[in-house]
Image (cartoon, rainbow, N blue to C red; front, side):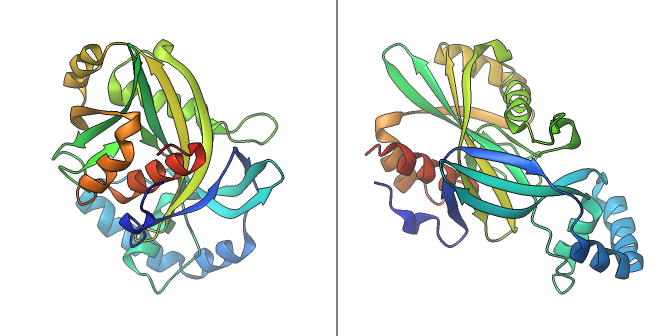
Length: 254
């Protein structure tokens, strides 16, 4: 089993199991705090957006995570990004906003071996430049809402997979949510998914030449994943470390 001490300072596993996500109505406590601090939020946003070129999109805020019989129920609602940014810039505001996104551990079957794909982040990204991480990852937006109020995070991750690897979605055989992790530094959650794909490693490496976010994909044999995490702990981003450990925990791979 993986050594959980590797990542505990930055990220933790919240729950392991089948993940189902539902949209809730507005949280009145959060809304009151935002309304009370609207002027300050706008001032922070105006300065930050001019300096950093940000967009005030909707983000999915995690309200509750509950382990039900047979699955993990995640409840959340959509808030504007500028409110979360103000909370990050001014921690004393503490609106209680904790965004939840979706990340994958891509497992490639090439020949008789299963590989986990890591990639190096380019200098073009905002954080963790030159670190390595699992692919893909993305935010949950309003396009993920289905007619019955559930959140289709798997379709979102499928889109991110194609965008980040330049591989057609037809190469994906399955996507399954299996855990929720929490980044204690940035106060954000991630739904963890397995993504299974079959193609040649050389083909993926070639496709990565078109990526703006990543370079140098690394193919780690699944049965050596634990050793890889220990050896490269200092350069793997925290969320990927927790995601990989949660995967090992859920599958009991040693």
